[in-house]
Every structure is written in structure tokens, then in C-alpha cells.
Amino acid sequence: MDIGVVPNITLVIQAILFLIFVALVNIFFVKPYTRVMEERERIAEENRKKAKLLQEEAKKHLHSAKDILNSARFSANEILENARKEANKIRAQILEKAERESQEEISRKTEEIRKSLEEEKKKMQERISDLAQIIVKKIIGEAA
Image (cartoon, rainbow, N blue to C red; front, side, top):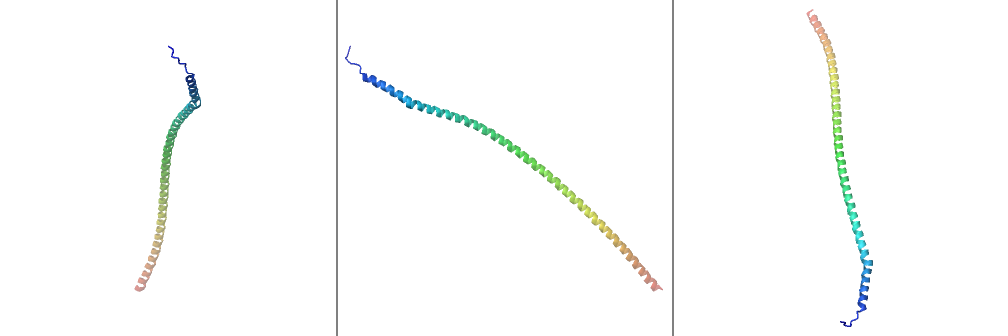
């Protein structure tokens, strides 16, 4: 059954040209595009890993900063408490000194007043004695 159709070589040439075209497109477009996409994916994955590591490191630093802050607060409170105690101690010393000085001043003034009173008593005794002698002389002088 021969129809008398000779196979057309054009179809074979077109098929070969199409395969060459597909190979060239694959070489010049698909493979570079695939390489670029794979490279981007690799870079994105690396960036995700780095971001995760940096995030973990940031959490560690944040935790460390919180610890340092808590420690600083504790130290500050301790320093303030020590300063309050020291201030109260100094205040007590100043009050004690002021009280002691005032007691000494009171004692000194009391002694001065006592001495002044004794002197005044002596003067009064002398005046009373002088007045008594004057009165006695007048009474004796009038009686005589």
C-alpha cells in the first residue's frame, strides 16, 4: 500500500531546529534563570538563618541587660539605704553633740547664776549688816 508519499524532510528539519531552539533557550535562558532563582533562594535561606541567630543573640543580650538593670537597681537601693543609715547616724551624732553642748551651756549658765546669786547674797549680807549697825547706832544714839 504504497500511497506514493515520500516523507517530507522539512518536518524532520523543523523538528531538529525546534530541538536546537529548545536547547538554546534552555542554555541561555532557563539555566541562568534557574541559577539566579536558586542563588536567591540560597541567599534568602542564609538571611533567615542569620536573622534567627541574631534574634536569639538579641534575646540573650536583652536578658543580660535586664539582669544588669536589676543588679543596678539592687545596688542603687543598697547604696541609698546605706546613705540613709549614714545620714541618720550623722543626724544622731549632731543631735547628741548639740544636746551635750546645750547641757554644758545650761550648766555653765547655772553656775554663773549661782555665783552671781552668792555674790549678791554676800552683798546683801554686808548691806544688811551695815544697815543693822546703822539702825543700832541710831537706836543707841537716840536712847542716849
